[in-house]
Image (cartoon, rainbow, N blue to C red; front, side, top):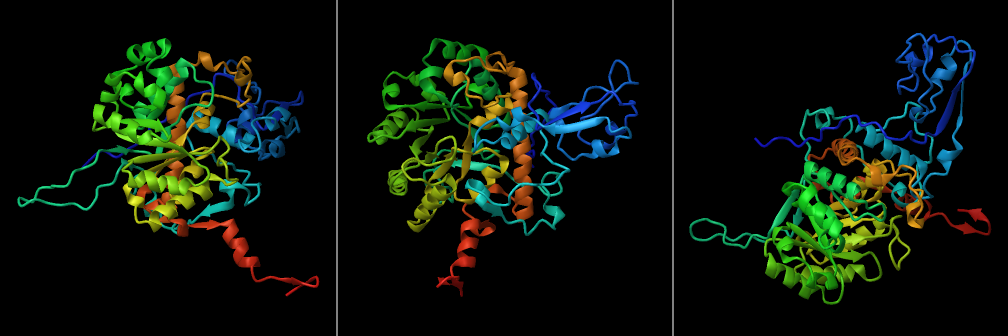
Length: 472
């Protein structure tokens, strides 16, 4: 029996003190009774290592705002207030909650749980306008996290096997297209910023350990002097085999063909002559899988259909950092559904693998975009959050990074990325178990296992008409 896939997480403390949602102060009235440390399950309060008789300063960034310590303090020596710096993190899409949650998962590898309960809205924009079906949550035997029943998160990347033909001796006579089996439906995308050599090295080592792949810019990685040194010297052969070079048409002519011969997968930017570029890469290495990177935009359904009929094995559909499509003011969950349904209608959905990226900010987004029709996802910003990035965008203005990403230790960064993927996979297992599914492949396109706010709103209010100011 093959070994079950598992991600080993290890507590990896941050280099800098994270920005927490709350600030906690211990007043002079504290009598060091330790009651706060007893009631706090988040380890905000502890005694000093050098003198156990005294309480240490609260670790405020771990506080969830449950107020247990405030209520239990016999001298009312503790006070709590919201941290103004926390509210300034990120933007309207990459919210402070999303950023801090990713920090926590990168540190601990655990699923974030708040004893204070969920206080936010139950619907919103983007992925928050859909809910997953948890109708099987009462069946504990489907619990893949605790190992009582194995749930697979593996996906196949490549063109699916057509109708199988056998020869007179019972052997497969059909040509078998090359495919890759990835144990998690997540690959690492090109970074929007912060692409320092040590960051890339940490990502590549994590991708190799996890068995997934990492898209890198071929122009910089394989042709640049610094990238060449890192690619050939500081990285093991096994790590290099998990790289997916991203190649544009001009780059292809100057690209080192020896690298193409060793690459399991190559990604090409879509243009009018992409098919000729595909033929050139296939000529160099017939076994490599080729992905075509296509922006979500106008007429993307017809474009994907055309590429699929042309024999393209993988199509990488991408939106902007906030999940908004180009040209059409739609979110990626809606465009993914449109593309998936279009291919289903033409009976060619199983002939191509769809990778979707842009705005994938949380573990639940992976499940939701697959549910909308993707085979797997590509993530970018969460990998930087794993390395303590605060999304301040200072580096875009050539200003100093507050957490000095360029000084990240690759080994430390590798474990932080492994931790966040481990936490995301465990959350995916929880969703699959609650749905009664034993493998993530079954989740693709299963929109009936989700509830969409737009559908509920339409069903509820379509028959409500206002005539003369009276609702009838």
